[in-house]
Image 1: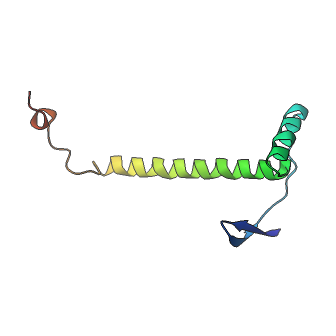
Image 2: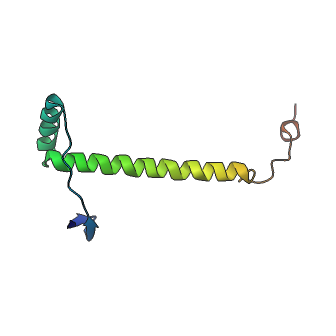
Image 3: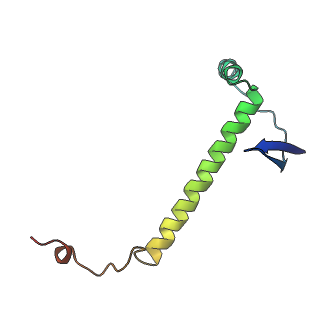
Length: 90
């Protein structure tokens, strides 16, 4: 299904898919109350929460890959050949 969403004043066409999650009754009641306070629906609250989670994990994974690549190719900030005592007089 395609939907048009407004993001920072721009309209975006996005592909969406419906799902029916099984949620504990007490958690759904709490989510519904929070959604009402935010002037949204429980479904939209769940969607936004999942999008934030996925974006955070994508960012963390990219940082992890960058860190590992940096470790494989040496120090990213310059030469790591200096010794600690050369840098700090005692």
